[in-house]
Length: 105
Image: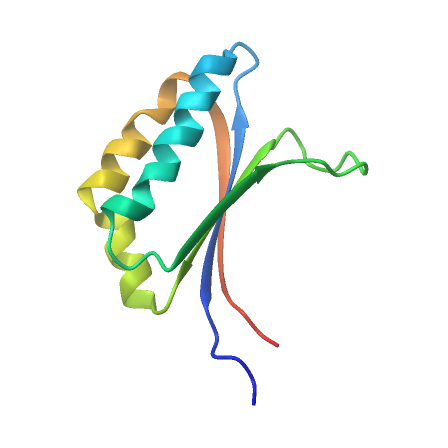
């Protein structure tokens, strides 16, 4: 029996060249607090780029959140804790890339 599809929300961050390690660490820690603050996040993981291909185009950090439904993801997007987090990124984030997909087996 195929596994039930899961909605993945993938976020890639490229930080400004002058972003200090403390600022980047604070972003990672702040992102990591969201699953405890926002109902509907079924799973959360993150990591830094280790690909030897050199195709990351400056993106160094990847965060993946899982949701059981579009409604859960949509509630996350407008949740005050998420909005507060996003508002803090301007000082050190150069750019981001977000992709959502339903898993397929």
